[in-house]
Structures are given as C-alpha cells and as structure tokens.
Image (cartoon, rainbow, N blue to C red; front, side, top):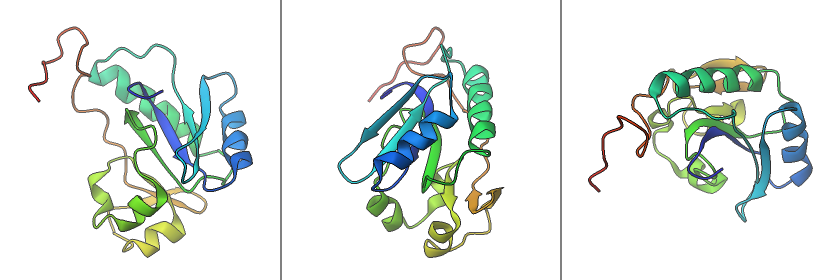
Length: 149
C-alpha cells in the first residue's frame, strides 16, 4: 500500500488487533503489517484516481467506516502514502499533531500530546482533527503538476 491512497491504523504490539481491524473492512483490500515497532492495518479503496475530489470522497468513506470499527487501534490517518507514517514513539514526540489533518487518535494519546482544542469527538474513545479532503492531485496522474524535488 505504500504510495497508494488509503487509511492506515496503528494497532500497537498485538498483531491480532490489526487482524481484527482488517476484518472490520471486509470486502475491501486490506494489509496487516509491522514496522518493527507496532502492527498496522491498511485499507485501500479500489482504484482511486489521483484527483483531489476522488481521493477526498474515498477518504471520507474510509473515515466513516473507521467510526464503527472495534477500538483496537491507537491512531489512524487517511491519505496518499500513509503506510507507517509515524511509529507510536515518533507520534508521541511530535510537538504539534495539528499538522496531520484527518489524524484520529485514542483519547489517552490526545491528552498526552496536549489535548489540543482543534481535535473533536470521532468515535467513543477517539478524537480527530477533522479531515478537510485532499488539496492536490497525486504526482504522476494526468494534469498533476510535476514535482521539482
């Protein structure tokens, strides 16, 4: 799922939590993997064009499904290339989680990282920085600006 559009959720040290979350997304392509520090569940919508409107709609659907997921994940984020975007230790060391629009965190993580008012209720036990949609096309898609880096 690296480089693809999808939602990735970190489930801590227990592989079975990531597998439980994957089962919740039944019928959608999922991947359970570890980054060496924690277990992840990644879910991707099928064939999302790289334009912002299509990616935004897919992201909103994934977040809607995540709202009813079992509470086995610690944090999640939808977007392009979100697979393993931060380990738990890296996330806890971030000074400002508001730089990750769409980030869903367990309430204990929200409190431990400053309890910023920009986060609102997402699902029981979770808070999120509301997802604004995708601001630009993915590089390499028709009409996407070429990257200069």
